[in-house]
Image (cartoon, one colour):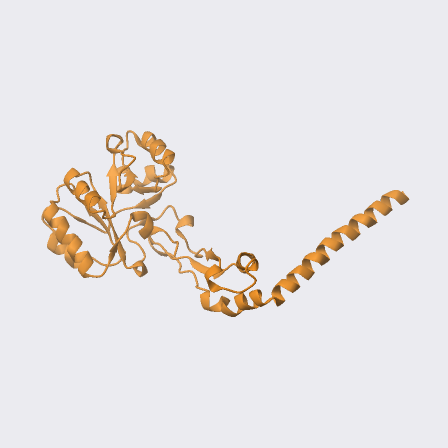
Length: 258
């Protein structure tokens, strides 16, 4: 019994020693010039997260906030022995209302603060080739026969019959956006696949370029129908540029990452 209590006492001393040593290390770390420098700038780098906005069955993505990870930043600078803002490391802050928790909602536009739009192509080889040749970011709705591992366009699975086959290809090559176009595959089908649901804000076809140009604004998801012609697409691109907006992939427009 004495041996048991002796062993227990040694274990307690060891645990207390580790705890005490850790506390001392934290105190010393907080008093170091590096950590003091980090604490001084922490508030200026802090950004609140912006919640996603929900209206009925639709959702507009929010934006993650960010804050300095003090421990990682300290360890990153410790070897240099001096505080340097260049080596700060940040954590993202998830919005309280987020896309991740509302996959039953439909995304019809991105967050306007990104000053960007996304273009989604129905399969029109002439228009798709123009975007690739000019290195213009866009997404394309594909069926199994259209999949191309080297495609510069972001490919979105849009094949009801061969959906699982395309998923395998996209996952194998780390190309899966995990967005599902509900106008083709239906909301119920997309939900079963555990995808983010989206539809276009508006579309460009062969005879509505004037209306489309008026409606272009940040956050728009513009579907370019297969019957649109290349000259109308060029006018669309000029108008987007004139309004000072960037063209980015759908995955970039709809992500809540800053």
